Image 1 (spheres, one colour):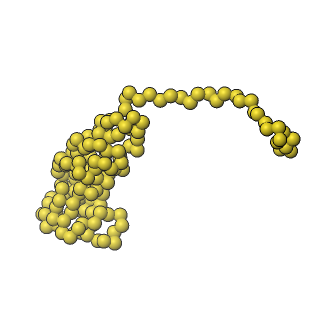
Image 2 (cartoon, one colour):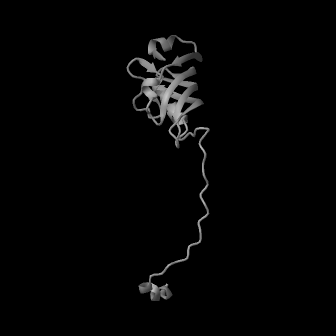
Length: 152
């Protein structure tokens, strides 16, 4: 969602809104994401100061991820909560910068989806085999080095 600073000044805080986003172009192909079926975000904006705002997000994203073993499609529902600050002060390293006169939450939502997404997922039909017990092997010693064995 995008808000101009003028719109933000007119809001009654805390202000809550819900939005559905299409993030296919931004997320497909990034970190094993094959499809983004839907992203629903419930956000609450709080004013910290005239130039700084705190937004809490509840993100529910239905993703299709790639299986780490079989490369099959794996549906995955991601649900996460996050709190981010937005500021007009470019020296504020802990906040997303409000670009010009517009606060845009899209970058923060994408970042939180990527952080909350599991590193690997596995298809339900993937079976893992346990490592076989190592067999005791009789050491074969080269005759030329046989006399050196006693030195160790």
